[in-house]
Image (cartoon, rainbow, N blue to C red; front, side, top):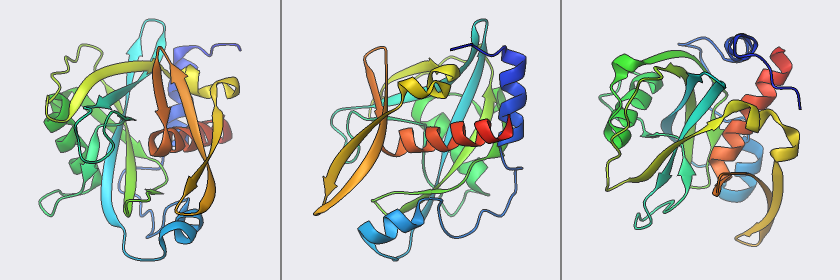
Length: 207
């Protein structure tokens, strides 16, 4: 695989995202799959931050690993984020607030640049992914009640089709395919992998 130069990757990222403030609609890009699994009930709005860090060797994606004693998604790799609260101005505000609460990164170090397509989860959330540049000098201070680890993965890892794996799982009697990536002992799967895949597909289309 030929590794693109950072400048080229940055340009592809900028072309792939929707403008901040875009109206994304009431349904996620995977709505039909979720309709079959959980029906058409209301989806609670949520937001995550896909933070990109410009390292010497290229862009990397910031990820967290949840603590093992959480009630939901224990031990899973995820983006910083959570439900959009009534006091949040919008999805961007929610993503920045959650990032500070979870890993202690101040919003002044984060430059939101755009949005991806919304994604629905089996827990009845509709997630807006917020893509942003993150200052390379950031220092993460994980909230020990929620986050066990903060780490980065090169963006090109997710752009390599050989790194993507598909696993068939059974959910309440229905077979479904989920995606997963592996990096340095970390398994990145489920909603996080699906949102990364959507990001990669949009980057491929924009190139």
